[in-house]
Image (cartoon, rainbow, N blue to C red; front, side, top):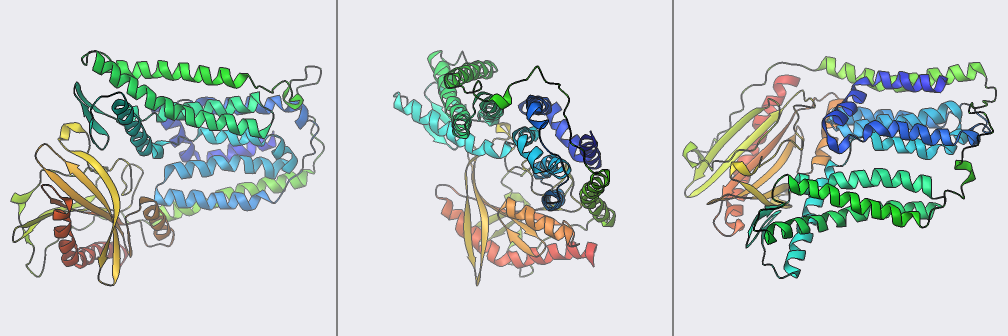
Length: 502
């Protein structure tokens, strides 16, 4: 009971993180299963009650180091605005609290039910881009194998009967998350040997990915053979869930052929024994001392985060204005490509269009300060192309390294297509005294800057140039522009930063 009270107290201290988890469960059907994770975990612990009744309980100081590390991880994730890492750090504290309060033997007895709590964290969006790519690859390959000609650009493809695209809803991430969550629970309850559990969990990962590719192919074929009358609207999502349900039933039925739950006596319910756990006597002083240590270690990190937030300065940023002092690159608003990236929140922005002789470049600088979850630099909500209605499509992206004198600059390279226009886009992050193209490294740099008192200032710099056929036509223009203007851009951004910290 004391352990449950300590867990409740710690979760109360981190209530904002808990609220963020529940909010995602409420608004997203993909993660609605999160409401069931805690009851499933409690049920699995209850099934181990006869074994727990024989375990000797005693406080253990070893997990306190891990608890402190998780607290530091939570702080870094909060500073960087990485909500999923923040949520994982908090949920992972629960098993460590159980270990600290009850000892390793009790912790080891229920380690799987405790680890299963990690499925409560809404995670999986990072897999959407590769799942989209796999689904598009699978569908296009299957169409070509059945003799249907396909023209493809990124996740968009055309066949003689119509146009198709693999979007987020078609990525299969919902099927994958549901399959892994249920498959892991099924493997634990049905099998006794670790090898069989791991094999079934592996199948619960692979099967929905392949099944989603097959689902997409069947939907396209249904639309193609029906002259685009069937499976071209909401109905193809309904067909998808029906198909997924049949695949999961087949997977679980095949898995039941090798079930071992009848062999695991420790998992069976002993109706002849009391359902109450028989706790051996533990020193009250030792227990209360551990309670104090756990709560103290867990409280340090939110307190320091509140201190950093109190130190933040809400003053308004000065306007960002960038011009070429040499006069080589002249401003010219008439050369706009009719494209603008989308950012969340209210950052300070500069959008400028420059030309030199017959060369034109567009510059977009977006600056964030005092970042919050709904207004931050590195976010999946900040996109180059919002939707198809904008007229633009992102047909490919990769990372590119640019030699700049004695240094090298890494940029993310994107290819944007419209009906009559094509743009080559290079973008990277400016983080006070460091630059990177990696959003993950960028998050880490931001977190360290914030914790060290430098602030969380950061900007994304985007340069774009049009081309007709070969992207290298635009690449040479962008390379020259960056070589000339990057020192000017960095100087202006540092000046904006200094208004806050000097």
